[in-house]
Each structure stands twice: as structure tokens, then as C-alpha cells.
Length: 436
Image (cartoon, rainbow, N blue to C red):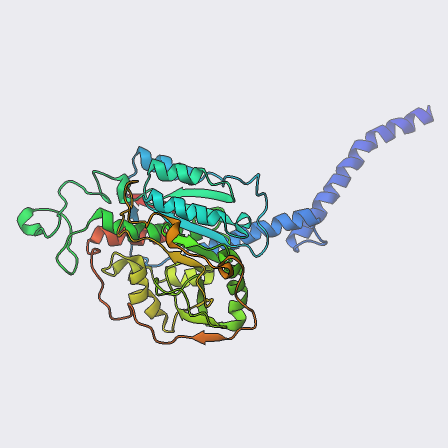
């Protein structure tokens, strides 16, 4: 009887004991949390926590208020614009074939419009670049053109991601930023014609075909640095090339060398370049690296430089000049209050091959490409890395070209273009951007 009684007591005590143990564990956990933890977290949990904290820190850094009085507004999107924006969220292709991007890799952004003959040459040149399989190639389209889309879909030599500017004037045939009903054209006088729009400093009204150049570049920069999942937390250098830049086989390795050498050899340099700022020059052939003003062929910089550029959004967007690069040379770079040098080798690793002008070369019958790659002659030295770490740096301090004081070629006088441009600078920093 006593044995049965003790067994019954034990059976009653077991749930009570379990409850006490659970309460003690909960109290200990609470005390640890209140004091920041009493012991190290498991490695996997600690790593996950650190990644989350890093994402939160990066997200906080991205929330930048440029002008509290400005209300960003983006055009109301149609079906095509929305479908392209959805494609921008797709993951890179060929990730299974190229599963890992190694430490020290560069990301490459190729921005294009609608010159398929040019694009085929660029893609062919990229396929021959040593190390290209280590890179992520982002192709940014100004508008949607099926032939351009198909060419990029055929790329198989690296990871590739396509993005499409969803507010490109080419996607809005009957409304801003395309041509809206009632818009002034050419040299119309708004008061006489009762049309809408402000002319540039030369009396010309906006042309969507022309303003798309600057809009695309600025949208692309903001999207790559602050919007894309694949690049928004990347602090390394991003290399930017265009659809009429022929890329030499040694370009990627030379760019990596320049990025590695820049902090020691040219700490005042903002960027690296694959070619001289003079697009017709092939380089000096010296046994030294060269620091000169930043060029627009194969240029690479990091997030620190992007933050300086982004902080000058108002200067960029208000300057009456439809070319993004001239805008940078004439107003943004001079505002840095120090020479904006870029480091390059003494021989070019990329070349501007296009003879077509603004948005030409679109028709397959157009012959202004010089019949393709035959115009670019490569020597053996252009196929291997040809920059030496022990070379000195020759600084070119004074160069001709666009500088502070140049008033611009115009084409950018309409208030709506300036506001759209500035809205792009807020896209990833302000929630609930209103639609026009």
C-alpha cells in the first residue's frame, strides 16, 4: 500500500517538476536576452544574425533624403512597362553553369538601346574575354526591342541578368515621358500654340528620342547601385560599358589589376578606365600607368564614389544638357572640389567602334559599323594582362574637353524631365512614390 502511494505521488509530481523546469529555462532565457546573452550563439545562428544585421545597416544607409521639399513622381505605367518591371526581378540566367562568383570579381553593366549590329559585336567580344565566366553581366535596356532581347537571351558565357528601364520614353508613345498630346515641339512658342513644355536655353522643346539618353543612364545607375538584389549590397567596383564598346580579351584581368593597384598607386583616383578619355586614342605605350580625367569607355567605380555622385542628383538633373557624360564633366565632377582622376593602363583594353550617331545603326542594312569587328585590330599584347604592379603613375593634370563653365548643348529644358530625373534618385529611398 505504501509502495502504491509513493508511486502515485511520483506520478503527480512529474508534471509539476516539468513545469518548474520549463519556467526556470524561460526565466534564464529572458535574463540572457535582457543582458545581451550569456553565451555565444551557435555559429550558423550567429552568421545568420550578422547577415540580417548587415542587411539592416545597408538598408538604413540606402535611405537618403536629398531634398525634403521635393515630392518624387513617376509616370503611370502601362501593361508593357509593368511587364518589363516584373522581368527586372527575375534571377540571373546561367547561374547553374556558373554557380559561384569568386572574391575579387567585378560586376559588369552593359547599357544598350536599339543597335543590334553593335550589340552582336560587343557580345562576341565579351565572349572572348579572359575571366568573363567569373562576372555577373547586367544588361540594361532603354526600352524594349525584340531583336535586342533575343541577342541577350543567347548569352551563355557567364551569369547574365536583363533589366529594362520601365519609364523609358520609348514605352510611352502617347504620354510623357514620350510625346503627350498638347506638347510643344521644336521651337513652338507655348503662349501662341497653347502647348505644354519649357524650351531649353536655345529655344528648342524636348525630344523624347534625345532625352532618353540621360534618363536611361541615370535610371540604370540608381537601379544598379540601390535597387537590384544582385548589386545593391555590393561594395566592390562595377564596370560600365556601352553597346558600341569593343572589349579586348585582357579587359577583365586588367580591370582587376587596376582596382587592386588604385588604393596604393593612386589613392586620389575615383575610378579605373579601360581606355583613354580621348575616344580616338589607343594609349601612349609607356611603361607606366596613367591617371587622367574619367572617360566614358569602360569605367569602373565603387559605392563610395556612387554616393558622391548620387548626392549631386539635383545638379545632374537641372543641367541643360541631354548627354549624361557631358553633364558629369561640366557640373557634377567639378562640384567635388578636387580633380576626378581615373587610373588606366598605357594601352587601351576597350575601343569605341561605332561611327553611327545618336540612336543610329538600328537597321540591319545600316553600314556605319565598318562591317563589324574588322575595324578593331588586336595585337598579341592586347590578349593578355599588360599592366605591371611596379610601374609608376603618370598624372595628366590638364586636358581639353568639357569642364566647369560649359553651359551645355541643351535638350533638357522641360521641367518634367528634370522632375522625372530627380524622382529616379529617390526611387529606392522613399516609400509610396506617387504616380502621375
